[in-house]
Amino acid sequence: NPAEILAITLMRYHDRETLAWSDTPLVDGAIVDIDGNPIEDAVVTSDPPPWWRAHKKRAMFYNAMARGDHRGSMALATSVCVDTVEEAQRVDALFADIHAYVLSLRAPKYPFAIDAELAEQGRVVFEKTCAGCHGTYADNEAEETYPNLLIPLDAIGTDPVVANGGVIHSPNLVEWYNNSFYGQVTPFYPTDPDSGVVGYVAPPLDGVWATGPFLHNGSVPTIMQVLDSTQRAAVWRRTSYDTTMFDEENLGWPSMEMTIRQADAPESIRTTVYDTNYWSQSNTGHTYGDHLSGADRRAVLEYLKTI
Image (cartoon, rainbow, N blue to C red; front, top):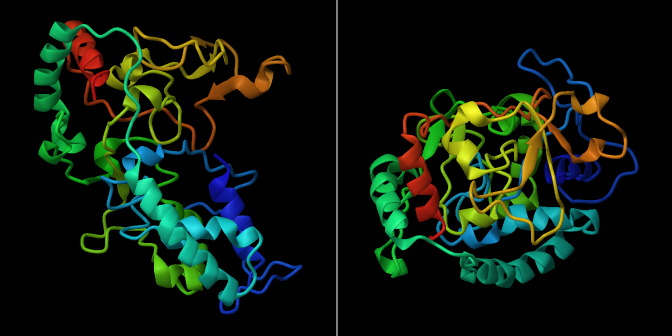
């Protein structure tokens, strides 16, 4: 998902106060490391979450940076063609309706066979092991729970780049946004306003079967591998882009492990290869399912088909 880099590029060319376009950059757009040194060819890798989760989430982004009314952060994407505050205000009014529509969306139903008995076994395991972060699910939406928890980086252990974006890698752009028209609508908080925690929000899992690849950066092709970190490949590629090809057994993308790095792959397939050795693309962390038995893990997968 190139949204982060596109937003950074666009913001650099707009006056913060008036939103007027400048043919030369007005803000330093370098992505830097913890020592302030520019990271060459930095790519901020993230996989867009589905819109149908928005009605449960207080924060739109993985790192909880945009909270509550999401109109401002959504409208920022239109800055490619908005160069006055007046036009931004007009667009903001439209996004009130767009936001309302997004909040009305719900997850698709799993279209394949489900073993109901195994799924019920999985529900018991899920509610004991996973629900504390990801919530509970029911046929009646009013009976569901979702805690909206921000999990600290040292607890979740997944790739830290997106969480640290507004703290380490490009804090000046958060300052630009918060002092612009968009920030007055939806301010960014790169850390938790109360605790100062940096981390990721454990998402609701409605329709999770349809949201692969998994983890916030799309580094894991199946939910089975999310639940068992020992199965994750350092370099992999999707084996089919036929939209009817779905891994029903492991829930996710049919894929294969690669024995070479992405840069060494034949040019004909290079863009289909995911290399977790690159910056922002690590597949570490979220080891909470590693302790499960194979039978429990299989049962949880079956249950996830039902929510």
